[in-house]
Image 1 (cartoon, rainbow, N blue to C red):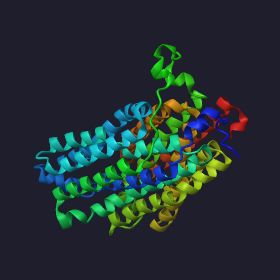
Image 2 (image 1 turned 135 degrees about the vertical axis):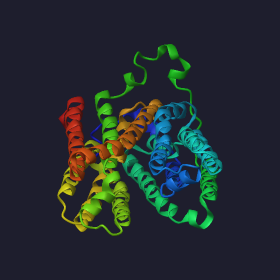
Image 3 (image 1 turned 90 degrees about the vertical axis):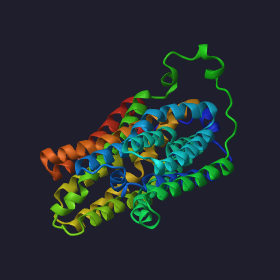
Length: 419
C-alpha cells in the first residue's frame, strides 16, 4: 500500500529513483555516525577545557560550557535552509563534501584556541560549516524510491542516534589517553576520513537546471510553497519535528537529579547516562523497523500513533517508584520515538516539489535545532518552578498535543483517507 499522506506523482517518482541510492545510504549513514561521534565527543570534558582556558569561577565554567555547546546549534539552525537550497541548485553531494571538509578543519581548530571567547567563535564556525547529517538526510530522502524512503531514513537515523550515543561514551576516556587538545586533532582526522569517503564513493547525477533557474520570471507567486502539496500538512509536520525535539530534550537536564530523587544517590550520574543510552538504543533498534512499517501502512498513521504512545510513556515516567521502572519506560519511549523523525521526513519529502526538497527539509532541520536548544532550557525552568515530575507531565502534554495537531490538520488538508 502506498503512503496515504500523498498520492503518487510520476515526476516525483522519476526524480527519486537513483541507481546508487543503496551505496549513498551506506556512505551517508557511516559519514553521519563518524562526524557525530567526533562532534559529541567533547561533551564530557568541555567544562574541563573551559577551565584550562582560564575560567576558574564554577558558575562561569557552567555558563561558558553551555554557551560553547549551544553555539553550534544556533548557527546550524540559521544556515540549514541555505545549505538545503544550495543543494537543490548545485547538487547535494557538494553540500556533504563541503560539510565534512569544513567540519574537519573547524574541529581541528578547536584544539588550538587560546581563550574561551575563541572557543565559542570556533564552535559557531562548526555549526556554520557543518550539517553533514542533515545534508545526508536530504540526499537520502531525495534519492530513495518512494516505497523505501521511511525505511532508508530510519537506517540513516540509526547511524545518527548511534553517533550521538557513542561520542560522549568515547569522550569519557580518550582525553585521558592523548590529552584534550590532541583529541580535537583526532576528531578532525576522523571527519576527514568521512570527507574522503563522501568525495570518492558517493554518486550523484549532475543536477539539471530547473525551470525556476532558467525562467525566474515564470516562478509562481509564493515561490516554493506555491508548489507544495497540502502546505498545511507540511507546516504541521515541520512543527511536529520541532515539538518532538523540544519535548524529548526537555527531560535530559533532569535525569541525573531524578535518579537521585528515586533513591539512587550513589553513582547517579552513571545510572543517568545508562538510562539516556537505553533510550537512544531503543530508537536505534526501532528506527528502520518503524520506517518500514510507515512505508507500508502510511507515514501519517505512524506519526500520530508514535506521538500518542510517546506521550503516554512520558506521562508514566512521572509516577515511577524506582529506577528499574524508569529504565523500562525509557527503553519503550526510545522505541516509540525511533521512527518518528524518519516518518516525518519521508512524509514531507513526498509533499514537497522534487526541485525544492532540500529547501523544505532544510526548514525541518532548523525546526529540530530550535527544539533541541529550547527543550533543555525550558525543561530546567519547569523543574525549578514545579518540580521534577512536572517536567514529564509537560513533556507528555506536548507530545499528545502534537499527535492531536497532526490528526486534525492532516485530516482537514487531505481528507479522512489520509489516515
